[in-house]
Length: 355
Image 1 (cartoon, rainbow, N blue to C red):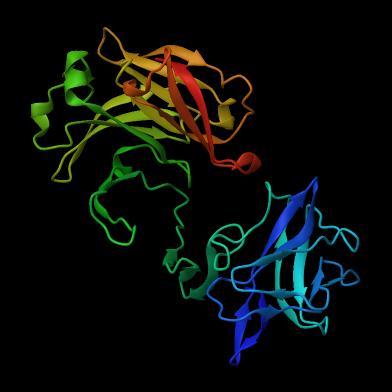
Image 2 (cartoon, rainbow, N blue to C red):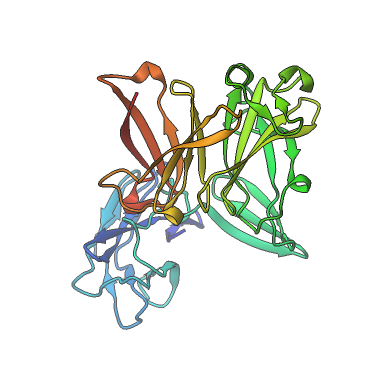
């Protein structure tokens, strides 16, 4: 936090944001006085600097921030903020550092605290403390994380179930886990399950789906109480898709192994309207999409391979979703992509596809 003066002997925070102008960060730009303040904050004479101690911008005399207001300062005349730089705020003595933020590359489009006035720059993980083999991480949202080093160098291939109808304060807790690691080939850290979709039992039996574990037609009754379908799980590191029946009692049976034909799989979507499985790769595969259908042999077979949409850069798209049949209009319906790289400050993009 940036501290601006005191209130009854306690520091008063004045958060700042960094604004992008052209190819450089042009200002340690926006100083906030949170709306919760009861009085105006005087920041006259405070000094903004970059990573060069010889550079400084002095905030004009008489500059005050009323509760819930902000002021922007253009520092281009005094210094610039580059792709690897710092923004620092000092008291009027020019030596007492109030707060600072450094970065190693240009923002897209700006560095900011989220939410305004309380969040940390960039991400929300703010404080760290190591206690033996445990690393504690504090979020400004109020969450405390207990982090334990994973020395295995491998991914835990696991599926969690959440009940989205319960939970308080917006928090959800997993109600069940199916750990499938022991029955699958080992993959490196952060290269495990990246994609999941579900296909109803009725759809599979009608299509003549073959159960890998028995070599015969898939029979849902064989598995007792389960989720009413088969989960397909995509492994990022290998591009392989596995089909599992996840039973309510905790057992799991692999009923399909599907070679995607791609080096990685980041998303899976079953499209009921067209009875096809979508497999999506990010910039690892130049944004390629592929569809598969259950063929005459009862297994998934390639149908069509698509290049990424025209006009879309080669983004780190790790999410893909199709609208339902009810949204068809004029022969098309919406589709959505989520960009894990937040390119250009946008995480979600929308397009259309034939119904």
